[in-house]
Length: 305
Image (cartoon, rainbow, N blue to C red):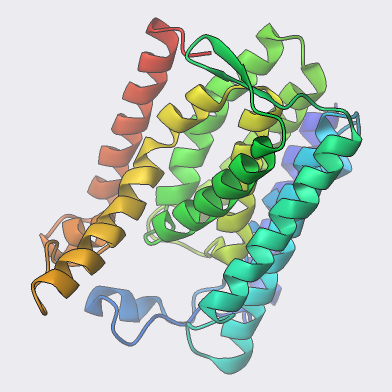
């Protein structure tokens, strides 16, 4: 019954948001793809609903609280970033250094509450349990900052980040059930429902964007689920598309500096390179979806959980 109400409420919220909040507009980068200039004026911050509606229906157990707290704070940071874009009508948002500082602070807060709840400080990596104590805090900080930025970079075309994230939730849902973590499985399923509703409005061509509100939230949510379930190896495998997108940016920057102006890719992140090569957004989405499905099969057949 809860999930039915959640699905209906999500649908109503998105229809209402698209119809009555037309001032919440996204502004594309001046140096971005020419084909993206026509997206100026598309409603943004659509991640607001899939970031917070599931939290209205979940039970706040000791293992759910860190997930909700951390991903919720990242969603708030993302919303502030989106608000700046809307307010000043250019795609700059919060300055990068300040944004990184807030990400580190939120990660530290997440680790503090993680310790207060007596959560384990060991990691299970490909079948081996390693107790790393306080180093675990640095690991959480790195994973959360890297994950949120990677999800943010991947959110560059209609349906990409939302679709991959939908697929990513499926194995986490079943692993949470296998481990008897039913409250975590419920919040994952709740997110899957609201995210699916968003994806229907975001899949090419988009009525609205998730914005930093949604991408930072999703990065933090799945990172925290991996941490709380002690399934970091599974998280790393499933997050490989996001890792590759981030690496493509790093490679582009380093190559540009080393060659004094040459580019390794036509444009970074990699999905923009494919756009420049003539691939449609739909085709790029399908390529990444197939890669994510392949990674899910790897997780299943090699039992990386």
